[in-house]
Image: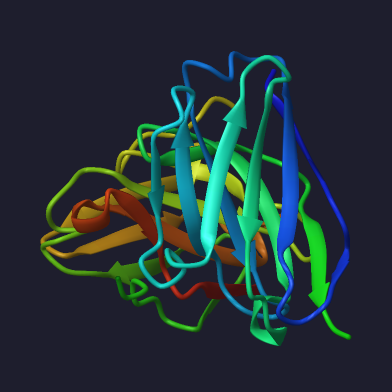
Length: 116
Length: 111
C-alpha cells in the first residue's frame, strides 16, 4: 500500500517561494510517475506537474515559468518549488502517484496560504 | 490547456441513476483512452473511481461505470446511495503538454 505525506510551511509571504516535500512509503519512487496537484478553497483541481523517478519533468504551461520539481530517490521524496507566489497560489496542495494517467494514490493534502 | 467541461451539479433520489458528462477536445478526451474519474468528499483527498475510461479499481462498487463517445466522457452512478453525495472530477491525458487536465467538477446531490 503506497502512502504519501506532504510537508512544508503552511504560510508563505507574497513574492517568496513555496516549498513542499512529499515522502513516499510502501512503493518504489524510482520506477513511478509522481505529481503535484492543487485545489483552491471551493474550486477545482489543477495539475501542477509530473516527475519520473529519473527526474524527467512535465509542467503545466500556466505555471511552467515558476515551477521546479525534483526527486530524491535515496530519501524516497519528491519536491515542489513555486516561486514568486501571490494570493492566487493559496490552495490545498496534494502529492500523488500517477499510473497510466490515473492518480491512484493521493496524499492527505496540505494547505498553503500566501499572506504577509 | 483548458479545463474539461462538466455540469456544475447533478442530482437523483436514492436508487436512481445519475450521469455526469465531461467534454473536452480531440487533443485530450477524444484523442486518448486515458480518462479517469475521481470522487471527493468535503475536506478529503479525491479518490480514483474509474481509469482508462471504463476500468474500476479494486474496491470501487460496480454501481460506478464509465464510457466515452467522441470528445465526451461520462460517469454513471447507478443505484444512488447517500454516501455517493460528493464532488466528482474527470481527468484526461492532454498530449500537447504531456500532462493531464482536470474537469471543472460536478457536485452530486442525493435527494
